[in-house]
Length: 163
Image 1 (cartoon, rainbow, N blue to C red):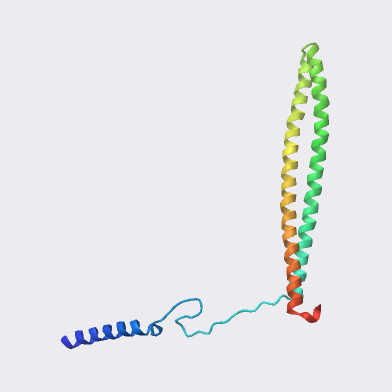
Image 2: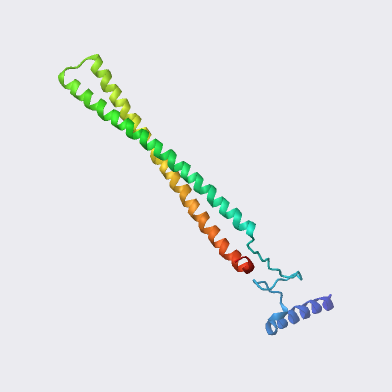
């Protein structure tokens, strides 16, 4: 038993003294070394012509979607403008009619004017949402275009014979 304890203490003392004077004997982990014996590999990614074409096509698709979204937003805006003109005329007519006297017909005209105003608010909200969506798609399209331009530049560096 004494011999075993003496061996354990000796091993601990030896390990502590080696670690103190030769820290390179200890296993270390950092970004350059590992404790396993597996080789460190670096993956190289070159930008191929297919990569560039795919990015250009993605940018083109996004620009087409942005154009369609912008067209839809413009249609909603035009519809809101038409409703706004109708609401303005209807409100003006109802206001003038109610100044003279009140009748069921004139109250119905006022209700119609009020409903047109509510429709106008809804159409304006929809037009603003469509404009925001078109802006967001356009921003993504600009980023995709920048990515395709960067990929083309990298491709020309990776494959100078294609320049």
